[in-house]
Length: 198
Length: 198
Image 1 (cartoon, chains in turn red, purple):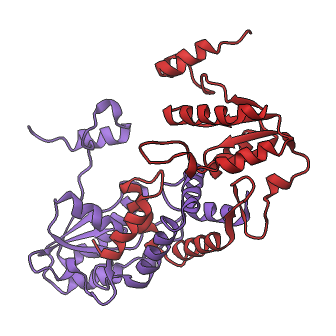
Image 2 (cartoon, helix red, strand yellow):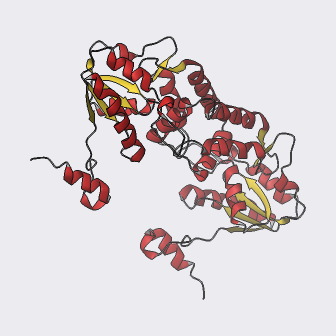
Image 3 (tube, one colour):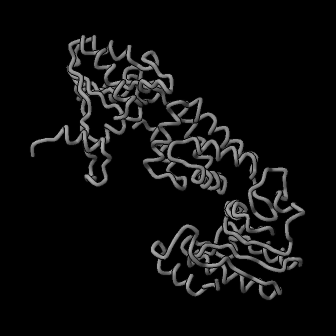
């Protein structure tokens, strides 16, 4: 294999969702017609690199010079409801669901002993400040449903409850378009615990 | 969505193997820690763009200044056997199989009325020249097993047979780690037609 091609494949395979084989296919497609794919990708990457930053209020992605971001300044959104997410990208997922109309706060990670991420590495100070400033009635924790997400949720609960705010978490249960046969035991157990009247 | 992010997602989703959702995940990962992923990807892309070209003999990828490529100049390979592939990347696939030790010739496509690719768009002239120069005893067509691949194989057969060379094609049959229940009817029909003694 030609070394620069190999190097490109390695760079691409570091992206989530791209294994070695698909990175290889992508690299070869990029090189096959470089003016069509490669050049536009490079300029899109460079443009994004130069102009995208994280909003100083919510931590989500925004264009440089557009701070606070559109979601933080949108007057139609509910200031009393604050959704805490791990990653800036989670904001897009929740927006796409159409089920939330409050403000956001991205932590930039979760508590993780294995990745050596402690409370000081997360945007917890600015979270406390936002809540302490008043106006927020409920903090909805939209965190992962693994052990690290649970630990982070517990930590934030302890942190915010003294401030007199309600702290909630996303419901556990079966995902859409799924069924009992497709669900793992923990999901099922949690769905039973959280069962609802029909 | 922030426009430069959207633009980056669109560029990424044009790569083979990346749908809209995985392009989104990749874009957000690139932006999350740009110095880690985005910068290395941009430089890998730029390096590949600047230094990779197609070998003038076989059409496969090589570094600029290394022409003919390593496969074309390797003295241990068999000059009598020439493998014709559609894309430069197919050469990597065949090399990885370890089943071929001759030379290569990439056509840069296949005959395709729908994509308006005619014989003049393919590297067929240089193929005839290579064969006419003598030394090649067998041309192995490693083309796709769809209608366009069949048409291309037929065309090349007509083109090369007057030159007194044997023209062969990859066997049709069941893929490895598969079975009758997983195979489509045409594959099965071809596997039956090509059945072998045990």
